[in-house]
Image 1 (spheres, rainbow, N blue to C red):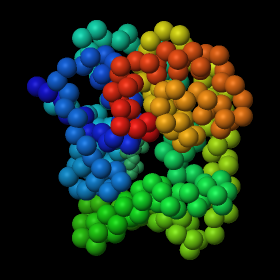
Image 2: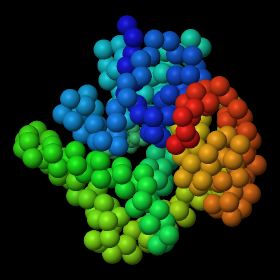
Image 3: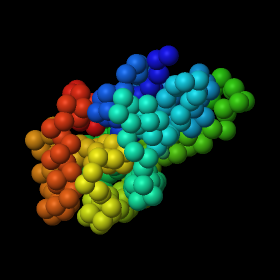
Image 4: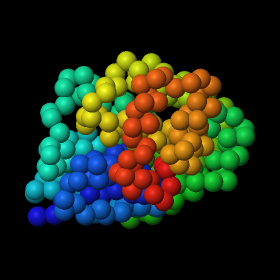
Length: 265
Ligand SMILES: N[C@@H](CCC(=O)N[C@@H](CS)C(=O)NCC(=O)O)C(=O)O
C-alpha cells in the first residue's frame, strides 16, 4: 500500500522527509502538496490528520506520523536498506535541532533591522503571514468549535508578525527577538554541530541538511555552489571543518538536487 507524504515545496522540515525518501530510495511514497503560504494546513481536513497542523505528515501502513522525527525514522526503517537504529547521540542531535530556540522557520521571518524589515515586507515573509492570516480569519468566521481556540491562538501570533511587517506595530520587539535568534543559529553552526555531527550516514543527517540548507537560503544562497559561502558571510567566520565537510558531502547528492531543484529553501 503506497504511503502519502504531506509536504510543501518551501517547507524546511518537509525537505528533511523528502531527502530521506530520495536518498534511501523508499518506494511507493506519494508526495501531496499542502500549501503553507495559503494556510492549507489549518483546514479541518488537515488537522484531522495531524492535530499539530504541521508538515511533514506521513500516512503509511494504517498509521499517521505527525512530526519530522517520527516521519524520517519510519522512512528509514522501511527503506530497501534500512538505516541502523539511531544512537542516543543522534537522537539527542535530532532533538536539539528541533528545539524552538533554533527554529529554522523563524530564520525566514526574522528581521534584525529596518533594511531587513523593508525586504520582508516587500517579499515572501509578508506574503506568507498574510496568506495564513486570511485563511485563519476565514476559518475563525466558520465558528467551528472543534478548532476555534487553536485557530485563534495561531491568528494572534501570526497577526502580531503581520502587523509588524505592515508597520502598525513598532518593530523593536521583533528586531530584538530576531537578533537573539540569529545568535542562537550561530551557536548551532559553530558550537553544537562541530561537537555533535558524526561522519557516518545517519538519520540525523536529514534533519541537519534541511536545517543548514534553510539557514543558507536565508543567508542569500541560491544553490549548492554558494551554500557554504553564504553561511560564512552571514556569520562572519569560516565554517567549522566538519560542517563544511558535511555540506560538501550532501549538496552534490542527487537527492539534494531533487529536493531543491526549484529553489533552495
Ligand atoms: N517540530 C515539528 C515542526 C514542524 C513544522 O514546524 N513544520 C512547518 C513546515 S517546515 C509547518 O508545518 N508549519 C506550519 C505552521 O506552523 O503553521 C516537527 O518536527 O514536525
